[in-house]
Image 1 (cartoon, rainbow, N blue to C red):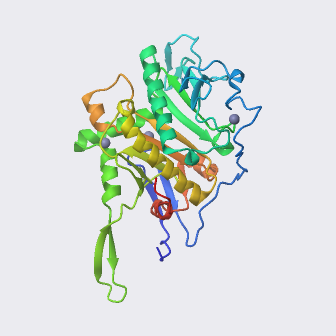
Image 2 (cartoon, protein in one colour):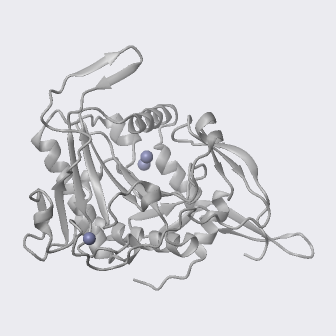
Image 3 (cartoon, helix red, strand yellow):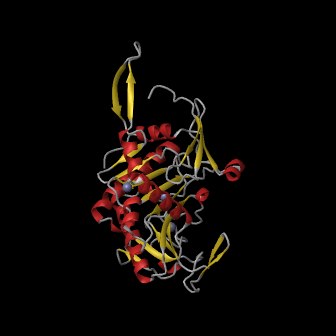
Length: 362
Ligand SMILES: [Zn+2]
Ligand SMILES: [Zn+2]
Ligand SMILES: [Zn+2]
């Protein structure tokens, strides 16, 4: 791209969750904002005092699952030492007026993503990432089978202090709750309403739009249309089964979503072959982010159809996905007070910058 992107000033409504919106206000020549807290990442492969490093297994409670079994594990799941939810409490849900209060019943587990202390997601192999998501899938299935009171299992990752990670060793978390989290309920409700109105899955429609967007190339001198090309304006990375897109309206400037190309509401039915492709798409998307914003601190979380509520309607209207939210700025009073997120780079420009990164094939 030789032309400077045109400044944009508009409020965009998230089509999936219309209560979320973003003010896109770009200025000419604006540089991408880097993480404000650029802390030097700890890249040491092993740290003797780290409870998550290989060889220090006795520093954590006994593992719930080790993949593969044995001292040369690649991934370990352990109970969280400081759980926000415990399994020793009664499971009655109480509602007081508009405020729903639930007690602290549930499960809280830590997934040690990799034996290497300082490794980042984009430095892990695609095969390792596929194994990680297979491990999530299997543990989620096991949790649901073990306790029918658990309505939702949320998998998420905080990477870097700005994203809330308290231990530098790469890890993710699993929280199982007796209620479906509100963010998921919102998405499900809007997706259902959209499906009832149009007969379409809103996520499938957004993917189609992202893949087929047409650009017009004009002749510089005459101004005549020279050709039209489908550039996939919001597509950042595409695999055989999965696509990484930059949403048209997203809370975080460098936010990316990875979704199955073919409609599927339920992460738990993804097979190993498809997750191998997912691992490649995730690795490449994260490598692009690392190139453009450098040392990204981020959160990711997995949204799938709530377990046990599968109806034909829900299976047709919802579409599982991974949301990746890099933390490049701290929300200000304006954002907290208005609920309107501010983005100083347009999603189109962000996607173009990420796409332009040259990565070796894998
Ligand atoms: Zn470690
Ligand atoms: Zn769909
Ligand atoms: Zn979502």
